[in-house]
Image (cartoon, rainbow, N blue to C red; front, side):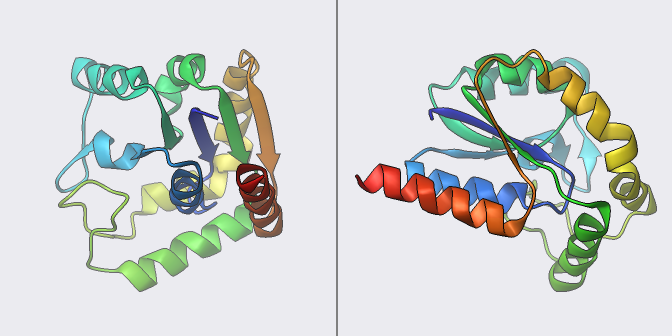
Length: 171
């Protein structure tokens, strides 16, 4: 595992797993949300975004979390492992609300500076409709992936996966 891509619904734990894997594997962690936004949640678009993604994936190794379906096909071409966090809608929605409450008024470490935690109705709609709308599109794009594809469907599965990986690394 040298280039690991973590995808899944917002609130599924992509960034948390990314940090855990980065530490365990000794790989740099790339939170796509840190690169996609200017301060104030202003989106980077077009050539600016394309160039940023190209620079990020060109690096020798990384653990990268984030969906960004418009760049997913490009990113999976460089990944050797894709981890898909496939959680129920209610779980992700609960975690997004919990994150909002606990991080309200602050900029989390996995987002761009100047992006203060907020509750956006459009974002909540995305989370509520992810499994019906976005998930099928993501899975379709990932059909082209030829590396190791790992689906984790619960926190217990994530913990077991990280434990197994740690045991392999120690051996």
